[in-house]
Length: 253
Image (cartoon, rainbow, N blue to C red; front, side):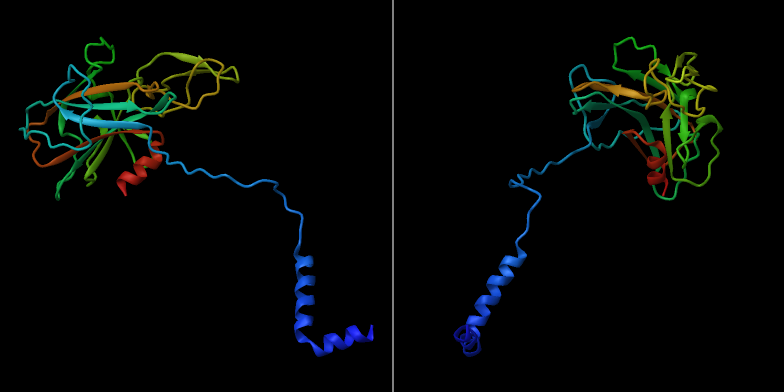
């Protein structure tokens, strides 16, 4: 024993080796895993791919471009453009279809730029929703609520978000899971959007929600007639949206 003590006193290296051995034993632990952790990275993109082209629906499968310049026109004239939307997801996708009208330069949006708006969904389909829709267009306000385009008063904004309230005049009703009978439209076009769906199911959508099945493509052709007094440069865009309030806040900021 005295020899071991003498060894430690005489050999700092021996002391260091013993210290390392003790430290190694003290740091050992029981871990919570018993395998390695294989890892995979994934990129998730917006499910709906949209395009736009000038004119009415093409007879083929034209999808359009992400950005185009339409042929110049005149106040009092009509023009047509078509938007396409393809669901790239492997499930049905639903959302609100909105159109954004923006004035360039120092011009302001009045809400009176159009005197008519003809609509043709999937040309040749005989869709009962087709026809004049100017009275079914709602302005999406900054908080996501709606008001009729006809009631809009210019407030100095250069941008206006429009929603087609295609089911706004619906007289249908459904029963929710509480047994309550709920009307699809509570007070007509541009009235508050309330939850609505199939009877006795959990509702997550409202009226005027447009759906695309997996791999489905839809075309929407719009033919606006410009007010005779409308002049300036305007940008027209379309988008599928699932949160009107959040979208409006982003657009109007």
